[in-house]
Image 1: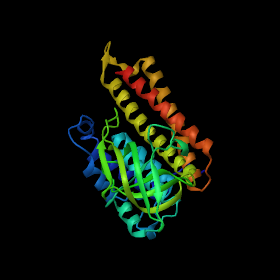
Image 2 (image 1 turned 90 degrees about the horizontal axis):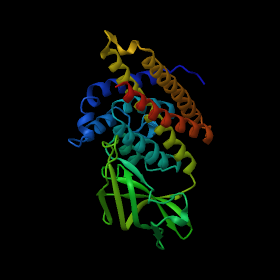
Image 3 (image 1 turned 180 degrees about the horizontal axis):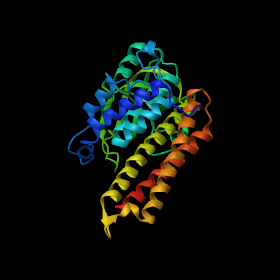
Image 4 (image 1 turned 180 degrees about the vertical axis):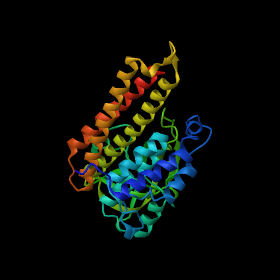
Length: 327
């Protein structure tokens, strides 16, 4: 692996960093206090090409790789993790499933890539959605091959904003994945309770009552490994952004706060905490960039992806805790 970013990756990283500084960091607190939402920012990100990172250029996307997506999400999460979570879900989980399933509708892919429309993935029902026998949502096919979906999905990211959803459902032949138009008849959306630290992220519960599917994406588990790997890498990238923000806040405070006539940053206990957090942050970055690079190269090593996700998420918890102690 080359540890240096290429020119395109550096340009996109700097572009996202500038966007976060100018459009995210200031309103992020209001978003999380419930006094506004990030829809305008999400639309602007579509204009920057960040809602179609993995979509091929011939289908209207940026045609970039997983590493570039991960780098972008880390920058975005440094400003607001909830906004980054929506961008990650759309790119890696919604579009990720469509691309892995060789979805051929270029017009619709182009709309998703531009941000003109959003796509989510509705899988969770409060049970193990990988166990087809446990799926309560059902799919029925008629003689013409037209599928209809009935059932409910919980805590769906982008469930309120997305125009389409990749829905996993139980059919006679096993679990299937279907693309459903969420604006059509037979679909009801209800806002879910927000999650602390992710209040910007649009979450909704979806209920389907004989909703007609617009596309059959095949067996649900056919691309599950790829989608799960993409989801985990993007989760790790968001955790890296959270770690960066927490470390910067903690160190910034220790440089301002004075005790006994000098900044508390000069006391060794503060320096220990800073060093531990910086070390864990860099280790998380290296693990995550390696896993993303392997995915970009088509080398899906599940153990590398899982290690990166576990370490990055747990590191974010520890770095945030130390930042609180610094304060």
